[in-house]
Image (tube, rainbow, N blue to C red; front, side, top):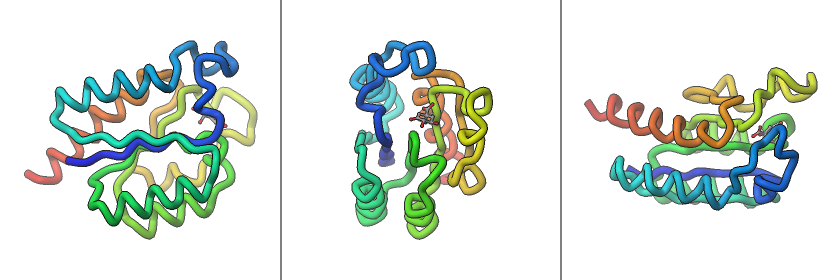
Length: 148
Ligand code: DQA
């Protein structure tokens, strides 16, 4: 099965960016850890980070054209703003898990609203970089149950 991991703006700065909130693990380390787990689970992984909304929209379209089975997305700040990314996920009907490193419910009020949570298979937040690995395990299980 094919899985795309999408990361939104400023996540390229993980490790440097507000480490008290987002931890000290870099995005490159998250990618490496995911690739190891994907190999164990026999999943094909594409990993993307962009600071541009339209680039992420186009990756969702590309995922659809490539018959990608599942998306793991940390929309970052676009979580709280992007109808365009929500519509791309609705249009393509690719099942997805929303991931946040931080517990968005324990922060500013504007972070408690997500344009994704109500249409996601599930949401993981507050578990740091490990949240991505948990999402990949959950995606694997979701796809196995679907093909049974
Ligand atoms: C984030 C939470 C968002 O509110 C924030 O804008 C981010 C990162 C997280 O992973 O905790 O950029 O998605």
